[in-house]
Image (tube, rainbow, N blue to C red; front, side, top):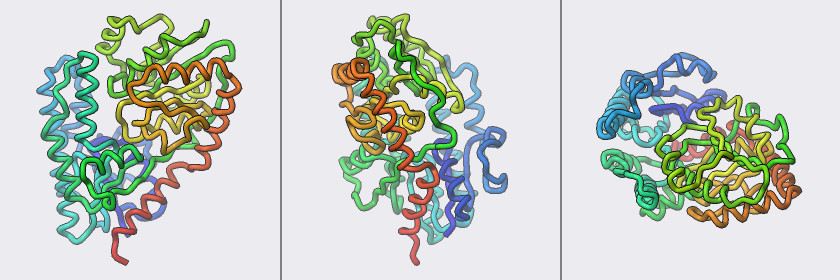
Amino acid sequence: MKVALSVLGKFHTFDLARELHAQGVLAGILTGYPRFKLRTEKLPDTSIRTFPWVLAPYMANPIKLHTPRHLMRDWEELAATTFGRWAARTLPDCDVYVGLSGTSLQAGQRQQARGGRYVCDRGSSHIRVQDTLLREEHQAWGMPFDGIDLRVIEREEAEYAQADCITVPSVFAHRSFVDQGVAPEKIRLLPYGVNLSRFEPIGAPNSAHFDVLFVGAMTLQKGVPYLLQAFKQLRHCAKSLTFAGAVSPQIIALMKAKGLWSDEIQVLGHVPQLELKQLMSTRHVLVLPSVQEGLAMVMAQAMACGCPVIASENTGARDLFDDGQEGFIVPIRDPQTLTDRLQRLIDEPDLRKRMGRAALARVKRMGGWRDYGQRAIGVYQELVPS
């Protein structure tokens, strides 16, 4: 069996590619990333084909934040459609083609016309569910939002219908597809792995402090306002909240206007993965109260550093740990429950330590990307006639 992959960016697809290559089943990976940004991916150059001509200028645009949104949406659409057409033309011979959703329709159709199988890999909830949750969130906080581009929604739904199989990373994502009428037997649950060689404990939190960590883009989708509401209510004389990830001046301005910002908050911006383990090892808890995600890999990364996690139901948390054991799972949009769970960790330091140890043990039992790759191969083999 040979498997070809495509992804406009990188995401988890390159982690999958390395495992498929190690098992001798990778036919090739197609990406919109420029080749020079892929030098550390530990894959043979001959297995990577790139189409960076539209995505790379978009990524490098120095005035992205000041470009009218409708122009950026058109640019994103151009990147997706040109890459999709190129992937269909360039698709190597394979038994199974796995394309990340949003750009895989034409290549999937070509693969099926050749007698092969097409897997749509969706890294989040159903596109309609995602759109609804984001619309609700922006309306609740008074921030403008045009909704997900209808062209994207139509393309994704066409992919869901065309594919022989849809893979999703979490029970939450799986449920969102079933709720939208997709047949359960067409969906396969395939939770992501974690790089256990890159994430490990390398320190311990300061027992005199209570330091909270958030890793990810500073967006409404990630539940940032609920984290700030909860953090403000915490009772501790030396508390701190650190944001690591893409910064949003608009979100910061909104939170300041709501009286939710304070001097106890530190904003680091982008932090390389190799430096994240220092943060995760020395903070008392990682909090991720997102309103929707497929499966946030930062949770398993934090667990691998011995850091317990508090996350919402819509993050894929239930695919990684049990509520009350390695961390806490809370409802979305519920700052009071989030406050209660954080305060418990403050008031019961031994509980936090037990959860940290349990989180590390749990993620080691789950295995890393090698296990993910083996599970993926099992899914693909089911599709190929013996």
